[in-house]
Structure formats: structure tokens, C-alpha cells
Amino acid sequence: MPDKKDIVFKGVAASPGIAIGKVFFVEGDDFHPVCREIPKNAIETEKMRLNNAVEKTRAEFKAIYAKIDETLGKNYAQIADVHLLILDDPIMKKDVYKLIDCGINAEYAVFKVVDNIVRSFESIENDYFRERKLDIQDTGKKIIGYLLGRQRKNLASLTKGSIVVSHNLTPADTMAIRERLVKGFVTDIGGKTSHTAVVAQGLSIPAVVGLKVISSQVMTGDIIIVDGNKGEVILNPTSETIAKYKREFVVQSEKKKELEKLKDLLAETPDNHKVLIFANIDNPDEIQSVLSSGATGIGLYRTEFIYFNRVNMPSEREHFENYSMVVKMMSPYPTVIRTFDLGGDKLTKIGLLNVEQEKNPFLGLRAIRLCLKYPEIFIDQLKGILKASAYGKVKLMYPMVSGVEELCEVNKILDEVKRNLKKENVKFDEEMEVGAMIEVPSAAMIIDAIAKEVDFVSIGTNDLIQYTLAIDRINENVVNLYDPLHPAILRFIKKIIEESHKAGITVSICGEMAGDPYYAPILLGFGLDQFSVSPTQVPEIKRVIRSISFVDAEKISEKVLKCGDRESVLKIINATYA
Ligand code: PEP
Ligand code: MG
Image (cartoon, rainbow, N blue to C red; front, top):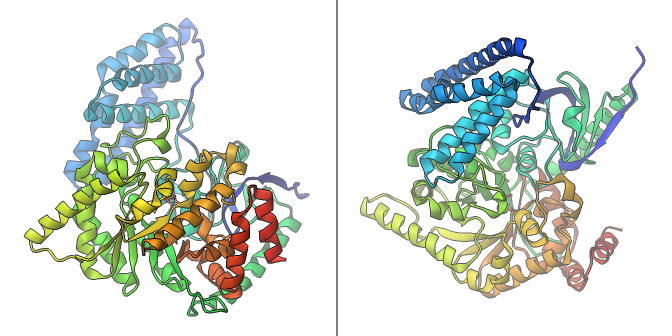
């Protein structure tokens, strides 16, 4: 059979590397069924179709709860039973039947009835009803999925070595997928710093996101190539293209081996200026790659992943067990544990959180704001972190701080937790350093005031760029405007470093910008103390640091600070690499 022609899709290079393999297609669950007219003589058949879908949904929920019962116990299975109660709700069923009797197709009838219930719940200020709203939506989506024959694929059936393609993968999906040893991630939506991208980098899995239409063009079993370096995906590659990419794969593996030789060397410029290179993780199973990368600490442990794919809150004990394991494995190197940054695109279905329906979740109840709204969840996490601090070097960090008042409020809670632990004679590090992420422009602007309240700061460039430039970091339509080299960003970074140093505290960058070798000379020249990057980027950043003198880096950064536009900045950097 003759080869088919390469079909090339261009997107955003989210995680470097090359993968060649078979597609495993993960269907989205945001169905918008169209309204169709059902002839009178087909109404009974339509009701049977509905009942059939309801029974399939029931069987699926029962299987899920049997699993919950087995892993978490009866109590949790009972809590989760609520989906089955919704399925059996006589009023809901009556309303759907009523619409079908009027000649409306079953999927649209379910969609309408669920939508009406959800709207009526919207105005009720009560956590219980908000949680039920999500349960009702979930149940509705499943029934509609069965009616359309498009239920979200059970990720458990994902085959090892596949390339996952989907319209969107939530951080919770990627958590479920990570256990299955996939070769690559490909999505329609998302940008370089969306959490799918961040997880893929953490796992060293090539990923291309923001491809807009790819999910409607491929099927499970298609052969594709994921080029995570260029941000391209090639569907039905010719044998020449496959051979070319196999050669490229070998070249990259060789390059990787060369970089591995830097593992035990210092991150030091030829004129003896030292910086620290730490790694970011979002799961303890990445520690092995942190240690083998040559990183000398964890600069960002994203703890929100503890809250995904579960129906109950993590207990204080779970927090403690998770963090103490990480801290022990990293000892004597430090671990910066960030308190939970849920909200934005990191949503959990744990129930308490009212974030699923926000119109602008990145500007909503996210991170430190959630901690203050639900102090009981926050306190459990703080206790776990403090207790873990008795087992190694722990630093605590708050995400999305926007002002001093907020910082004082969370510190008050922390002090209270410390007092109580002391009363109970629980051991913890009383000198544990506390830092703030600088990722909201207001915090960057008043960094002098914030620096007086903390022991260190870490710049979250992923969000700082998003909020400063007003560019949604996961929106593929504005991905070309998401620019770490915008003069406003460069000046903010310089200001944060300068003011923090004046206050005698250190500065790290833990956003993706720190892991890009192209930006490293500028950041070095600004006087950055610590680069915290995904484990795969550690050797490459070290290579750049070891190859440029600090004096030269300072000259470059002085020049870029004078630029008012991106083009001038680019010219200066490109001249550095010439
Ligand atoms: C950031 O915003 O740069 C950051 C490191 O945090 P996250 O990507 O988890 O929002
Ligand atoms: Mg952030």
C-alpha cells in the first residue's frame, strides 16, 4: 500500500522530546446536544433509549463506588452514592419525560432539565447545594454521553505506550494518565504554561498543546509523531518522515547523555558567580528524576495534586505522610512546599470548593484566597507541612499573594497552628522559612513591603505574565501574545530581585521561564539567586550558566532593561547567541 501524505498540525511546544506511536483518543465530556424533533410514533422508543442510557450510567456509577468502597471504605462510598439518588429522582425523570412527550429528543431533554436545575441552584448561597449542582451536572453529562454514544473514555483502559489525544486534559486527567506510562500528550487547547504542559514536563513526556482542531481529526489507533521541540504533530507520517524522526531521536538522546555529565558540577559561571538550580515537582514519584538531574533542592512542590481524583478531603495524616516522604528523600537538600493553589485550571471535585462554575476562574477564588475562605482545609495542610519539617529542610510558600494584608492573615493562621502543635508537644522546625510567590502584579509592585514579611520570594512567571499582560495562559487563541520578554515582565523581574536583595532575602523563579535556556543569561544578569525548573531542564540551564560570565550576563540584562519593545530585546539576546 502506498504511504499516505504527512498531515502536519502546528501548535505550542509544551514539553520537549519526540514520540512516535499510536493515538489513544480521550473524548471530552462537555456535550452540547442539538434539539431534534421526534415524531409522535417514535416517542416511546425515545423513552426506552433514555432508560437504557440511565441504566448504563447506573452501572458505571456502581462500578466506581465499588472501587471507592474497596479503597476508601464504606463511608466514602455512601457519600458518593448521591449520583445514584439523582438518577432515581422521580421529579427529574418526570420533567425529562414531559419534554420527550412534546417531541424533543432525549439528549436535549436531559440537557435542558439539568440546565434548569443548575440555574435554580445558582442563586442559593449554600455549600451543600453548590456541591449537589456539580453532582447533577456530572450525572447529566454521563447520561447524555451514553445517548450520544460518546461517553468519556475510561482512562483505566489506556494502553501503555500510547499518545493521548484530547480536546482538553484537566490536571486531574493528567494525574490519572501519568500512572499509565504514556508516550505523549496532544491537546486542542492550552498554552506553554497550562498545567497539562507542566505535568508533561515533570514526567519528561513530549507534549504539544493548543492544536485547536486535532481532536476532531484523529482516531484511536492512528499513528502520529509528537514533536515537542517544534510544537508539531504529524498524522499518518510517511516512512521517510518516521525515519527522519527516529534519527532525530538518536541525536537528542546523545545530547542528553552529554548533559548528564554536568550532574555533579556546580551551577557556577566561569567568573565564579554561583546560583542554585532546584527542580519543580507536582508528585512524589518525580523525586528520583530530581535527584538524578543534579538539582540541589525542590524549589516548588505543587501540592494541589493531592486533592485530585478523589471524593474526600485529604486528612492531616495524608498530608504529613506525603510531605515527610518527599522531605526525607530530598534530605539534606531543601524542599519548598507550596500550599494548595486550587482554582484557575486546577479544579477538584472534592465538593467544598465553589470554583467549577466561576466565569473567570483565574481571577476568582484561587490559591491563598481559597485558603482563607476554607481555613479548615488549609489548617490540615499546614499541620502536615509543619510536622514534616521535623524530618528535613522544609520551606513553606504561599501562592498568589496580592498584598501584605493577605500575607498577614495567613501567617496569623500559621502562628495559631504552630502554637497548638507546641501545646501538644508535636515536633516541628520552629525556624521554618516562609516565603511568598510573586505572581500577581500588585505584589510585584509593592515587593519592598512584601519582602519585609517573608524569608524568601519565588517569582511565578507563568501567572505573572498572564496577569500583567492580560493573557489567559491556557487560551490557544492568544498564545502568540504570551511573552516572557515583554519589557514590562523583564522590568518587574529586575525590580523584584533588586528590592528583595535590599531587604536581605533571596529570589527564585519557579515559572517555566526559568527553565528556558534562551532566557537564562538575562535572569542570571539580573542577579537571580535560584532557578527552579522541571527536572529535565536542570542540566541544560546548568550548561548555560557554566558557559557565560556573570559580567557579560549583567551587561546583557542592563541593555535589555532599556528596551521598550520585544524586537529590541530579541536583537540583544540573539547577538549573545551569535
Ligand atoms: C507560576 O505561576 O509561575 C507557577 C510556578 O505556579 P503555577 O504554574 O502552578 O501556577
Ligand atoms: Mg502560579
